[in-house]
Length: 125
Image (cartoon, rainbow, N blue to C red; front, top):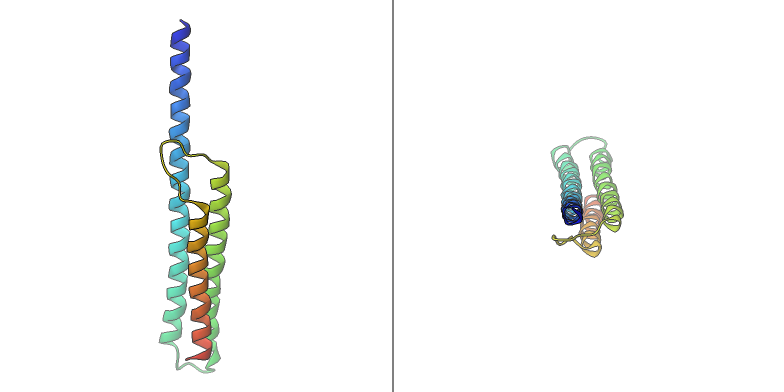
């Protein structure tokens, strides 16, 4: 009788471990979704600047593009913070999680690229 109880406990622990692994992977997919949204905001800003470059006053399309690109920076930074916070609360068992450093590198790369685009819009165009 006790063997059956141990078996049930082991099965429950395995299900819990697998659920936690799925949650870790869902966290990574969520971060990727927010990073894609940030990249889309950068694209919208660049497209707006390109389409309405001849608009008067000349600073208006640059300002609107800058707002979208700054929104992208905000999105990717908040996504990284949230993903790292969730990742800190979870442990992987069968799966391999994306390291917090990789999340930061991705966020920093997108943010640095966005800042370079803002500088390019205002200084070069």
